[in-house]
Image (cartoon, rainbow, N blue to C red; front, side, top):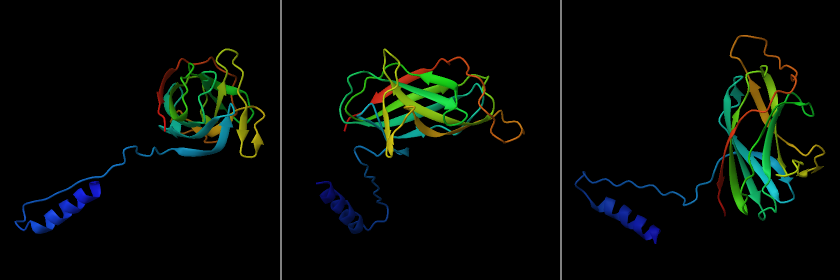
Length: 196
């Protein structure tokens, strides 16, 4: 039906010869695609597929904030309202220098985006840090199993990206080793659910 209307508009614009009549229009999809950085098919808790993420920036100052959106696809709603946990590590497998967990999420079947506002303490040393994500049981705190394309992940975390922490001063750019773990920060959480 809309194609007939478009054809009528085009024919009308060619028939008007006064030179003062203009038409303009824009066709948009009812459900626009969301752009995000993809991750290679990690399946968490058996049916939650982590599709990717969007991030406000890849550099933050000690004591600064960062917004991350995680994009998920669920075959079905999980039995438990799993908690999303995020941490920074100096190297893969190293102790975390900062850790964050959000309240339990109302998971639904289909495509879903969770929003996480991260607040970092001022004690973090400048350097490059890995951002890791996992799901944990809301009552026991136990991490749910993670399966990568090449098999199960032993430590049950997903390596997401590299974040640069900088004090914006002209110092040595060599990444430092992770300091001792610091207290958990207070974080703000909101969630958006959408279905197919």
